[in-house]
Image 1 (cartoon, one colour):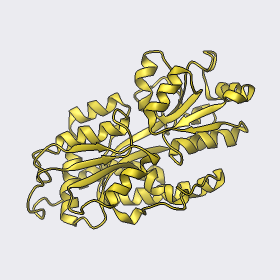
Image 2 (image 1 turned 90 degrees about the vertical axis):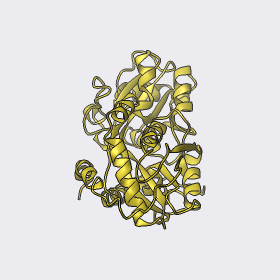
Image 3 (image 1 turned 90 degrees about the horizontal axis):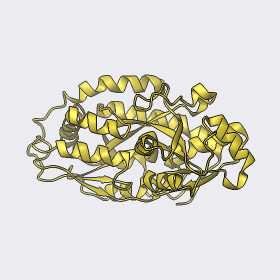
Image 4 (image 1 turned 120 degrees about the vertical axis):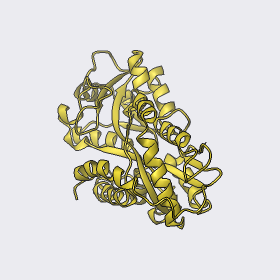
Length: 328
């Protein structure tokens, strides 16, 4: 199954998740904690919090879930904590898929593998974006404009990402490779610090989930030049895609997914899947995630696992082409 087909199939899989058997899970948990590897206020944090609020009163958990932000290392710190957590459903995690599909190609001393976690459900689809701030002249309005400016201003030719080894990191690297322009990568501990530096003129550009740009773009503090989806984002419809601007190789959609420790019982996973899928279908959750540029999207456990494997197979060769590796 192709990556595009998987994106489409996941929508139908949401309905399958709703059929998971509740009865096999004997008693709802008193409290669930959701680990998330980036700071509060970022787009993924909104997924964890809005879904967590809707889990209360379900056969999965009696109370609203508590979100525990553990930023750093591109989300790896949170996943390491999840690996060590009790495998009883009381602790789950929200992670971008690249932390499980891509990181094994990057980090020689990665402290976990994909097999350390049990997929529960996809949570939301995100498109990444390229934005520039006050360091870059107002005349720069397209990706090609930015690359021409970067080539003419090599000392300032940089871009930030939410973490080394993240998908935005690689999108920026591929943009430089395919255009022949050297772009210095600046990794941050999540989107928000980098976006703040773009607005403040400390760095030229940022590649990150485009929803993290929207508020500042509306306020005129930065300019979104492109988005990474196969079609324009419904949240910034005036912004052309990378493909529209001659960079089809930068077309990608990433997702946040919910995970549990590997040995969590299947009945618990099923109850969590059903509760999460129901939350993602709630209008208040849909509207809240729209503010940060995310499209809520649930799935079955099986669909999530297949899509994750597809991402791994797609990005592995590209990561080798980029040539980025690290020990930790």
